[in-house]
Image (cartoon, rainbow, N blue to C red; front, side, top):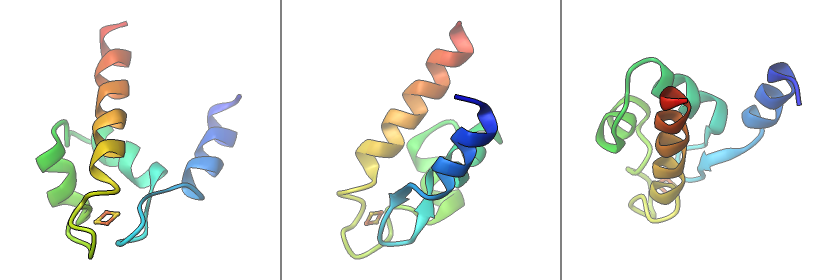
Length: 73
Ligand code: FES
């Protein structure tokens, strides 16, 4: 899949449902230097919704792992 198509899908995929933060925003935040869970949460506000991060935290950790794995390749 092209990067453009992937980005369109990512924009429609919510990572943090409480704060309505999509996957595209998360990926850009991570690529912009927020390379830990705490930094991503601080930069985006994810994890501060009504679920207290129960739903989005595992997904953010997955995205961070993907990012770190890609960097190592
Ligand atoms: S889904 Fe992110 S705080 Fe609830």
